[in-house]
Length: 386
Ligand SMILES: Nc1ncnc2c1ncn2[C@@H]1O[C@H](COP(=O)(O)OP(=O)(O)O)[C@@H](O)[C@H]1O
Ligand SMILES: [Mg+2]
Image (cartoon, rainbow, N blue to C red; front, side, top):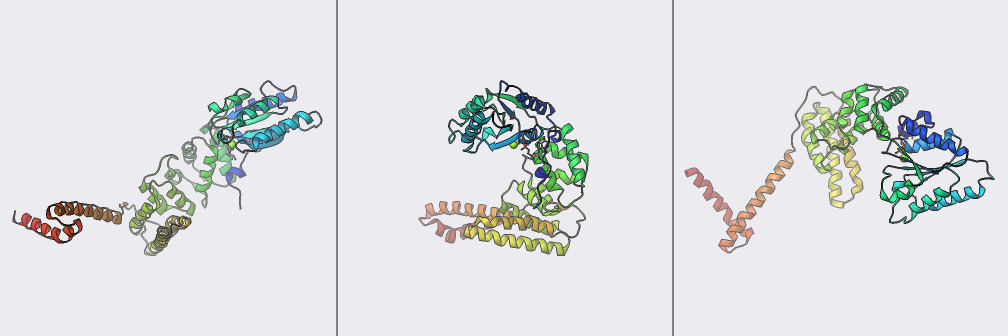
């Protein structure tokens, strides 16, 4: 398995972390100040949105300044005990050992107050007594539950990465991945992810799978992250996807469920896919997807869903070997229209049947079966003579 880009390009040194230079400097100075007598605030709380480099910065700082990193996720139930132990050992052994430790409590806002009652207070008290710097991270530090921690920590804010910091950083990555990307496309990806570097890298990796060049038009179909895409855009993305991943990702953005998506694909595949051989392959993939969905309906074995989805997205996309020449309008699924029409007619029949039944002392079913045909005939003749 190859490493994802977020792992591959995970900054190892502070100089490699993009943006937030002032915050990084503050952390660096605070850590250096530990070489004398410990500073007043013995914790540093790095806070800000996800994917801005809080964890990475703490790790890189520890490496750059020669600390031994003791890292734990704060939401781990054992972490309170661990902090206590690490801090405790440190106090006892501090003067005997030459090592410098840095304790990283990652994601303190993930502590579950219902199961970890007192965890925050225990951590705050450990921080007051610690002999080693304790770095904490959180997305939302203003959570009232974290007030005990705030008062023992130096607060260091991490801001969303702007274009100025992220574009040069991403350009270097694209260069080393040998990908040519239009600057406008890069800007679109950064803005779409609101400066969340983790998501940006994930998007970029997905988009560049199987291609060496990315133009603005190759990335815009992603749309804005929080916005669900209209079904037309999603269908277009599936029919025109160049890789399996694109096709699957597009389906994830759809604002309809998989059965509806299937109907849309089924309706439009014959017109969207021009070449008869391609069309046959696409319909074959859809037929197989339909088999899986039928089995899911029958057995409720939802584990099969991923096969159905792969077939109707990647299967359809990969059936395209011949380029399309023009744009063809998407159509609303005819089957759904018919089904809806049939439902409406049935409801109307029942309503009429009930009225007849109450006047003619018979059941609704019988009224529909024996009376309604005559009523229908009479009304039709009436309109003819009128
Ligand atoms: N400022 C940054 N510079 C470079 N890469 C970053 C930055 N922020 C996040 N990343 C990328 O995102 C991934 C997650 O970063 P992380 O430090 O865990 O974010 P946070 O802790 O703020 O949620 C990293 O592996 C890295 O690839
Ligand atoms: Mg983190």
